[in-house]
Image 1 (cartoon, one colour):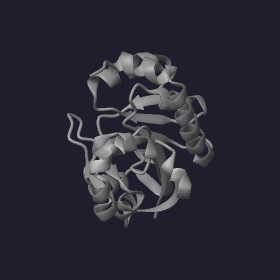
Image 2 (cartoon, rainbow, N blue to C red):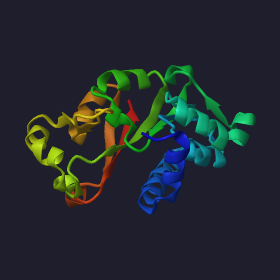
Image 3 (spheres, rainbow, N blue to C red):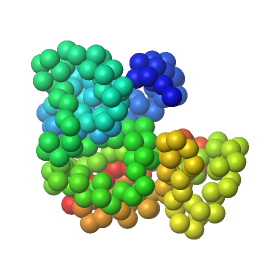
Image 4 (cartoon, rainbow, N blue to C red):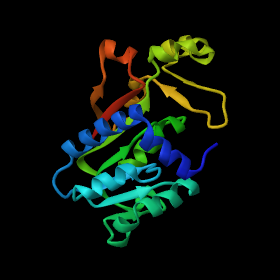
Length: 209
């Protein structure tokens, strides 16, 4: 277990996580029209939200974990004071051009169909959902017994959960894309092909239809 401050400091100090975050933020910013509003879903300590606000995007943050939200309130104090960042108690409290969910937020959901139905009421038509999920095909995880034990489940069902306190779920991208329909279609997956063997996270871009 960790506090919000410990998580925050770790994420800022980790070269690997900083690199992943930089790629994710840049992709989101490249996709967002000038001045478009964004919902940072599972905003953590506000690192991404602060970047979106700095680029002129009105940013809503949804973070249910109290420890994370308290750290976010301190880290984004100035942006919150001028309403560049607004905390919401429910995703349904805003309407935006885009929803971003970085660092495996979606892996905490067992079934994404209800989630995407909810997000369809938040994202304007033509907008998008950008999510980074743990990559179930990453060969770096092959050293763990849980990965080897679930390989057949991944091939057959495209989904498995690891017994743990957080019960993290792993999904093949096709399973998430199926759950997103009919409200969203998968527009982009990165990496693809052999690249899936080496990256810890996959980025999935869904377009609101």
